[in-house]
Amino acid sequence: MIEVDDVHFRYAEGGFALHVPELRIADGERVAIIGPSGAGKTTLLHLVAGIAAPECGRIRVGDVDVSALDDGARRRNRVTRMGLVLQEFALLEHLHALDNVLLPYRIGAGLRLDPTARDRGRALLADVGLATKAKRIVTRLSQGERQRVAVCRALVTEPRLLLADEPTGNLDPENKHHVLDLLLAQTERLGATFLAVTHDHDLLARFDRVIDFRALSDSGSDGGEHEEATP
Image (tube, rainbow, N blue to C red; front, side):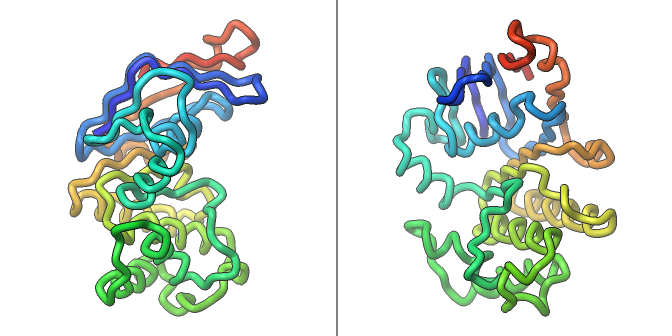
């Protein structure tokens, strides 16, 4: 499902660089990425999603060479083929919870917003305890509730690849395990691949494999600003 080969990335303003010599994640595999802040975990997720583009190297997701696409094509591929939970949630504040969940259908070419999709969105909100808040503007939701809305949005199109950056980071212990149960159950039902960044080691036993970035913090020659990943 995911193949990364000799990828180099550096932010335009400098200071941070990431090198991933090789990474393979199988179709249907559930993988957690752990490690210290600043090690490049979120950057790797953004590269796989096509939010960021590498300086060189190849990133292949399924049958698509993401690294060969232009910005517009990467965005279309991300919206129509992936589910994505970002740390900052990326919800539209003028929309209520259900419309945020259904947003991929309004911006993704080829996605059809029909009654089945609407029902699936409502069912997902009910699964995370937000059935009574489906019509509430997201600015009136707590951080934990917003995170659950973002999780529902990532799942609503039934993607074959789910990418999640700290998907339970703002949740209390009960909701944390409930949301992870939902993510794992949905990916298992769909036969989807699940790649998650997390600092919560209590969750790691639920994944098939863990990629540990801890060694990266000592590998740079300039105070840890240059990171090299060999997962």
